[in-house]
Length: 392
Picture 1 (cartoon, rainbow, N blue to C red):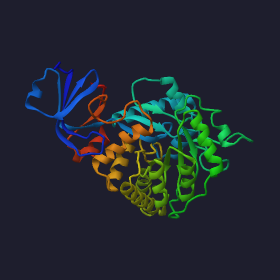
Picture 2 (picture 1 turned 180 degrees about the vertical axis):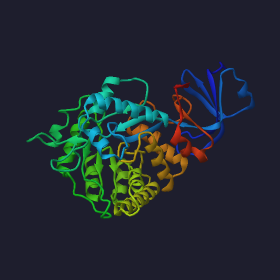
Picture 3 (picture 1 turned 135 degrees about the horizontal axis):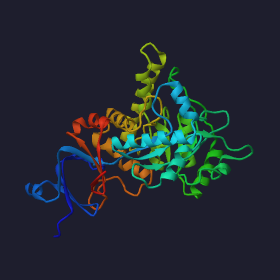
Picture 4 (picture 1 turned 120 degrees about the vertical axis):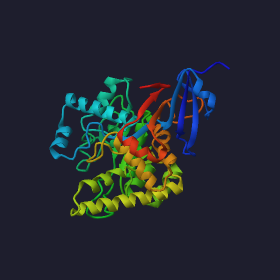
């Protein structure tokens, strides 16, 4: 048999399938694709083109399925207000910096949830296929007049329905973002807001997006807003706090993705002082979301890891690592958490590669020092990214 281009030796391999972690593995790479994955043999070390990562863990490129690239995780009100109102030149520099932050943590694709000026969409269109993470962007999100969401979107023009408005803006977008509830209360546990759109409004909007080939991501917290979004045919529920077990069952039935963004509440609990009632509220919200994740895990809900990076205290690149750790806290195995942050994310974003490390697939992976037991600690600092069998 003709010799392969490169042999990659891995101390541990997490392939993204959610299956067992494999030890002492050899990845044979030819023309940027994985030709074979097998157990390491002594003779492999004698190959003329061998990359020895026997003290490291290899896993697929990570995907953050919910970010806001125009915002940082800064907690400073002045900085956040400046980012909200910045012109494109300033936003472009910030987005580029955030893109590099994702690379440093092994995140090679992100799905942006919108910004009021559509800066992230413009940046994605201008930079095209330049090196770095794949950017899937929505442009402006849609919200109801007088309701939450002005920082990321706008309302349909006067006299126009939501369905009619979709398609009038954001040419070149990868998906549509709709806001169908408010935020979660940090002081009144379990308090939810009414939906922003009725089923009669949201269902035609999802159909209008589908006619353009665009999936719909819906910000929704609470049982009723989530139910309407699922019934309308959305691709994913974003956040989904306090949605309840009935909606979790519907997610399974309709094959709708859930992007739980639990790390946002962890961030609030760490930002607020011990005497602040909001801190206790954030901790209670977090625990409830983890309980919903435990239920979702047992029910087979398709979870995709999204951090809501750009929210206060949630930093680009680091956020997805913290969210993965919370999945493990909720009962997911380490390999299942990686699956949520790779294969599931790749499917949700409709990426060209499916996010799994297997024979025949593109040799896209990240290298993290040490064993899987220290994976999250190492990922918080940095990861080495390989694309098509070559170091990036």
